[in-house]
Image (cartoon, rainbow, N blue to C red; front, top):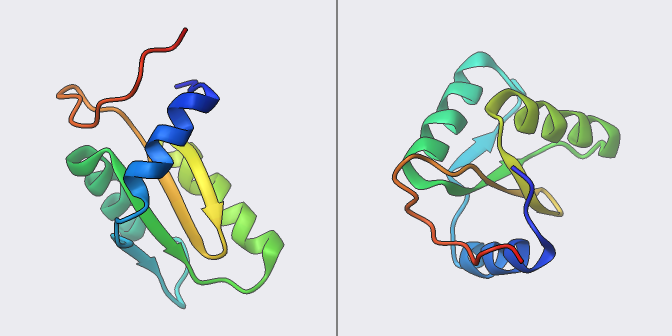
Length: 99
């Protein structure tokens, strides 16, 4: 899903008060973690994921894998917190129309 800058800004505002739903621990990105992220996206559409890696390259690789495996859209990555979005059939999160 391609989002405009205006749509991403809107989603960032909505995500501001959210708490991370999934925390990646010492085991890293496992099938179970991916399943939990997928489930959270289906239920909430807009979620935060805490990526606990101090290595920047590893963190970026994990973020890319999460985006790819869950078919979600990266809204922003600040520090260790990733905000991702995937629209479900119910469209629970309203986003502005693209112009």
